[in-house]
Length: 295
Image (cartoon, rainbow, N blue to C red; front, side, top):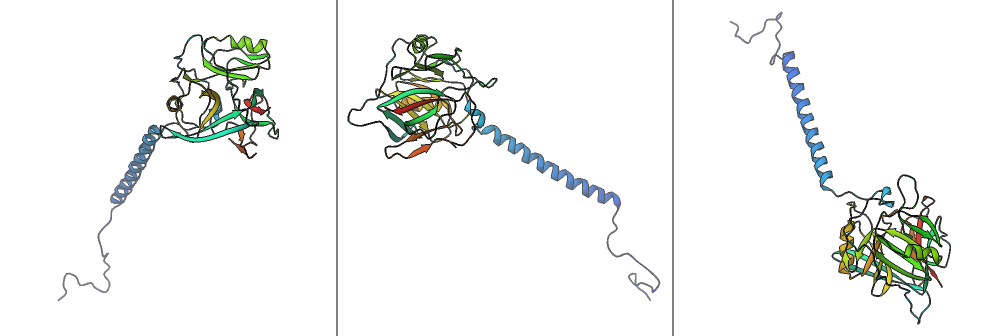
């Protein structure tokens, strides 16, 4: 007698569970749904991380054109002029590394030098230039110099876009903050130099500004009765830079074009030249600099 599991020689049976097409479709849909949900979660996580990150510098940081939040005086009649004279030595740049409010900074102080502005392609082989860095911003729309600017007594721009200013007349330099300054006209009359930039410190107090990106920062400062340039080693917010300069007890300070794209260099006492950026990079024709040259 055959059992229920016995199979005749001519009989065919399918062993295993029966699979229906409907079950296959349901399984595929489930997998697709899980994959889509996983991808959506990854995208949402990426968006949240990007929102939490502060904007970093780009090549466009060469020109910070936003209007600053002015908190200085309307007219500065207390300009102090600096020459940085050391009669015991020749022309040189003193270089000091320091840390302020957790920020690494370098202070470059030129002594016995001739300060001036320069517009165009600066000669990197000029042995007389000890310290050089970009000064005024350029307009994003037409590439012209942003703000009031006087070059060797010739006015190249007349706008009041920023309240910080620097004037160089008869070999002396001053920085300050004001809506109106007679030094623009004085620079024209005396064949001197003048430019405007963001105000960072006004009479010892930090000045708040609008730019919210993180970038390498540079400033032209009146510090310890000398004129100097302070450079940040890290990408930081402009307002954090201002407060660090205040902590450093800077009297007055204005911004200089920052970022790792801003050109310039310094030569130390041993004659070694260090560049602030890649010196082979192409730059707009109105790129301008503040220079400190050997006397």
